[in-house]
Length: 121
Image (cartoon, rainbow, N blue to C red):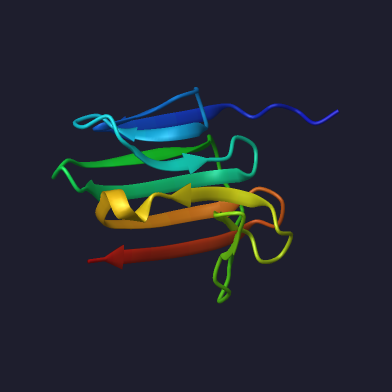
């Protein structure tokens, strides 16, 4: 049986529908800015500026050392979710039309691949 790892959560100017996943909301306008899958990440950081002007971030992960490996691959899109290109596990989705800009850093729990990206309008 796999041991359950202790997790941490730091959120500024946003909120999650559930404890460590589900819909991500902007605290100022209460609109959805993304969706985080519960079990497929070891570490997740999402910085955003909402269309309402609110700036915030979501940072969640497992406590302790997280082994990761650099990846030159980009996340792939399947069913409107950003997914790991190695094992196709869904990681998160972004509601781009509600954001002025964003950046992310995610480590896939299955393959330990580290992925980063950003977009500015």
